[in-house]
Amino acid sequence: IGTFSRSGQSSCTPCEPGSYQDLTNQSSCNPCLPGLFQDQQGQTACKLCGVGTFSNQKSQPLCSSCAPGSVQSLQGQTSCVLCDAGEFSGKNGESCVVCPANTYQPNVGSAACFNCLPGQLSAVGTLELSECFNPITNIAFSMICLGISFFGVTVYAFNGRFHRVAFIRRYRITKHIL
Image 1: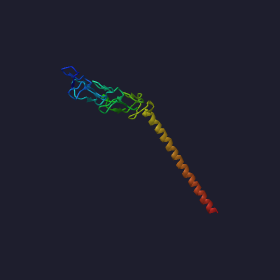
Image 2: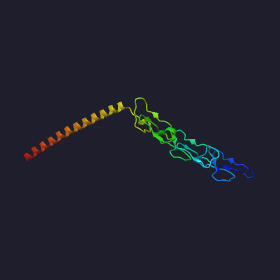
Image 3: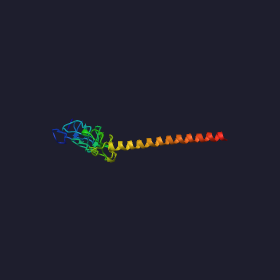
Image 4: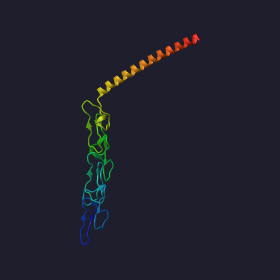
């Protein structure tokens, strides 16, 4: 077990890394399938590629790490998955992480997020630079809008009241005259 013997050989040879043999009296070793690996010789089974790694070919002695911007959260996989826009690959390629506040990431498959311009803020998971904003400008604009809105409501209320009062007086006067 863990070895093979070619015909005519009196001794067994250990299986090479990337292969295994779980039966006796065999003339060859079995290759580890994609998603599996074996880093030692003379083994009876292959191992699953770990989280954050993959193997897309057979007979691999080691699994490959996911490239920056991609992750694999499961064992025994043959590929990695790209992180979405607004995310980046976390430590060890295990999971995607949402971009923190005051950063953005417009691209799929990124290893880091970009900072907003100095003095600008953004929400968690922001996708575009245009979504970063200057809070002072926004507060000032909001105050102006609020002031205009209040003034408009006040004028409308007074105008509405005065018009209504005038209409009621005219109606009453007209009614009494007739």
